[in-house]
Length: 98
Image: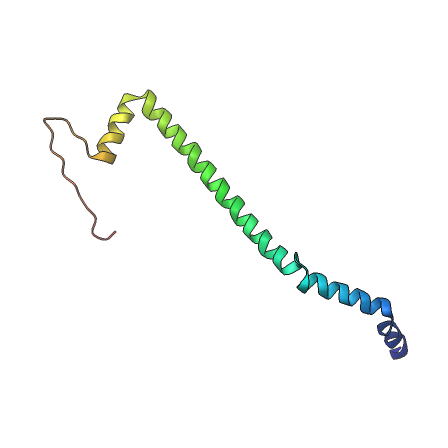
């Protein structure tokens, strides 16, 4: 049994295959370690792309609502830019915990 294993380990094809495997895993320009890192970065970039596409869709809907509906435009201006009518007063309530 040990002689069979020793004979297979002493085979030059085994050593060439082992050297090739070590070369691919550690020393090649596109080694497996770098491929895993690149794959992880690609997944993160796809996740970010999806997030920003969703944000763009949401903003486009909001812009369309602001363009078509004057009530939503007035609400947006009052909340975002603190605009008021001439006969109104504005009181700001600031949460100190945030």
